[in-house]
Image 1 (cartoon, rainbow, N blue to C red):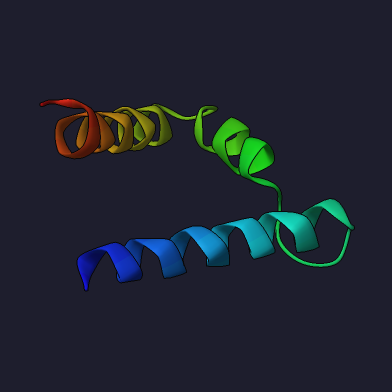
Image 2 (image 1 turned 120 degrees about the vertical axis):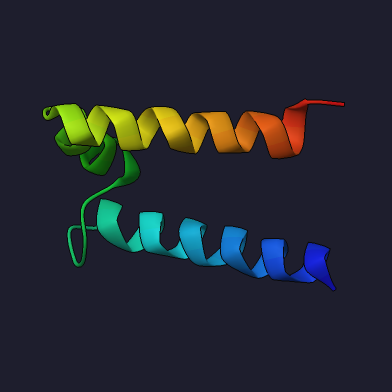
Length: 60
């Protein structure tokens, strides 16, 4: 069940990225991360997101 939820999130992220690259819709993932990295709280948020991903998916 959890794997299906992550698969849905992955597909949604890929669809959002495809729409953004066509110019209709939100910013691309790179643009969003770049905007977040311009401020200190944004850098902390990006760091915490990478930390969470590492702990949950890479630490085994």
